[in-house]
Image (tube, rainbow, N blue to C red; front, side, top):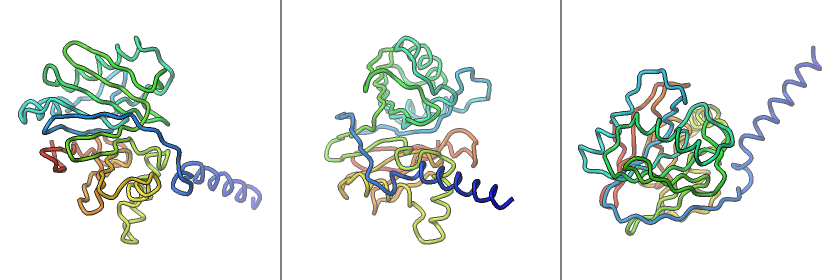
Length: 248
């Protein structure tokens, strides 16, 4: 019995270290560089769309909001998909993206920028960046984080699994951190580990906990599917150099 307990403890510790090693050591990270002239755009994450979508979807609210607010650029920060973590061709990606984005009912001629999660849910694409046109949508899909220059504002956009591979564990870490006055521990630690300038923003998803902290310049977009917590149906709105958490 004791041997079994020790073995379970070792396995548990190994799993924990595997998941959080980038919070201990500095991760290697390359960025896709993107510049945008839009005065406003929207950032979302964790839509968790199944390739055979059966659940009732409120994702059309994203497109409705963009149309209402005259927004034509959308950034999706990982976990667009729920069950699609495998190597795929560009043709296969095009088919699944077309089906998934149709649920969002986006305005015509919108620009869509996607940074996929690397450890689960999202597909593994063959290139660092793939550019597509589907119907009237112009899409850039990347397997690396995005460094976005929007006027005078720089934003680092990523899913968040670079910090903690498992999203549920990242959620727990932030909840525990809250008891020690470090409620944004994962985001704050990742920004520091990546050496991001204090005047630049880090925006991510993954934990499913939506927030924006203007002092630290870190933010989380929340989630659109009930997993280990209720869906938040939130996004980060960029407008004229300012970021705002919005309920859609």
